Image (cartoon, rainbow, N blue to C red):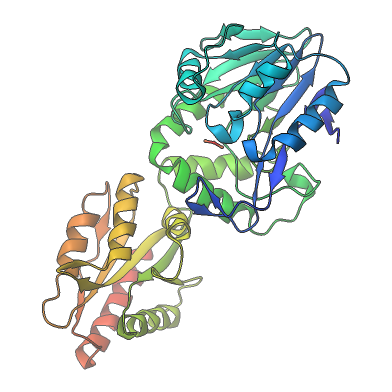
Length: 396
Ligand code: FEO
């Protein structure tokens, strides 16, 4: 169905509620939308396509919205197949279309589709595509999320087409703009999306932000989830925090691994002690039971992280080992850690966790490290009390 957003910009996105895992890896609880836009100016211009799984719906909408006009331009902001899987079919249906993107994108199109595009317009940073009235200025944003990514800024409507930036998981339900919905999970899902997909590239996100921060922006149209036309600071302020690895909340999460429940019990006891000392919104996660992408989202949110881990095969319990490795890959920084290990005959987890945490930049490990031998004893109860005190003092 035709969906006019404003002026002569139409929404051509589709929502997928069947997909279980984004990139076959990240669990989705409410699907995902692939946003695409069509500008009907003197020239017609499609901004990105959608995932191949939704091609029938997409082309039906495209034909209906074009109303017998042909397609003059296809702008590819991002070559990942969730947005450009349908390029080949676009070329078959609209053989005179000119594909507009940068040199890196055309190289990737060749790699993905073995396709040498003849009608192409290769753009550089700052180039402008004139559609008659609309003028799209290209702003390169490498590594937000892939190296070829670029934004475009419509000088006339002051719309920023932001590719993956400012996107989120979640299917759309009629309402396109964030200000039209009450979506309680939006920001936790936006963080999960950002942290797991783009989190590694904070410096690149800052570079891209510096290019757009002085633009007059009236609308932000990303490639996933809601569109923005006001209150931009709600999402931009968070992006700045995430990109600079600053915690959003001075709060504690406890990540524990527990085979027989003893480390879990200690995690609960630590949380109770922290609550008694006045801390709010403490969160406990069993790393074996919660998907790592949610844990990583919490890592990007809080200032203080407690890791509680048994020794396993003379190393770390696998799920904890994976969590720490992912933190390193994503460049997590500027956090305070507390460490608790459990081991029945040769506890090594604190030593290994210390080494792994110290591979992160600008982190602090609290002095009090606790060793539980199989199950907590009286000394461990005192240890937990002292650690809780140290955590609270550190947060203050
Ligand atoms: Fe939504 Fe990086 O693709």
